[in-house]
Length: 254
Image 1 (cartoon, rainbow, N blue to C red):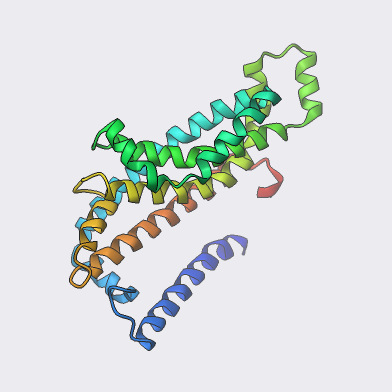
Image 2: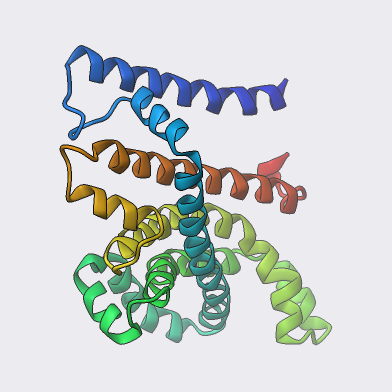
């Protein structure tokens, strides 16, 4: 019963949202370049499935590479900061600064620095997700059981053994929680970076080109937005599956 509910509840929620969206557009006769009805987005997807699928995969690849880099760096930096209270307090303001600074403003400098290829896209995808993931790692590692820490210290466990057997498992619930927010931030940054990197592929690139013709290409713009949202939902589902598999031992999954 629980499994059926977990599968059906999100499906019902999404379908209800789409129905309300469709009804809102039709009842108030919203112009298509302001808000496009889901039925017309679906028609656009049916007319050119390969085009949108290929570009969605490109955006997904950019986001996943950036997010993977961000997770690995967050674990390394978070482990180092957890070991030193002074370093943690010194670096936290910098992480907050990175988190709240509008990356839209400085992306031009990133392009000049890294060029117009894929590098600035991946950089921005990783950079925007890094602070929140690092906070998650630090909070999770600091929550490790004090008794277990004392036990490992009593047997002269090496730092990497404490990290692998105690601190990292303790941080996993927090990492998965912050990863849900990181997916959204990284995906938004990827879409924006693609649209500003003079590329011809990726959802952001085709969406930005279509924005130049709002009266004739509104369908393309809203379809890229729809595909980006679907990509984000897929990412959240994959995180939930990984969490359920890797955290079978944790109380939150029982």
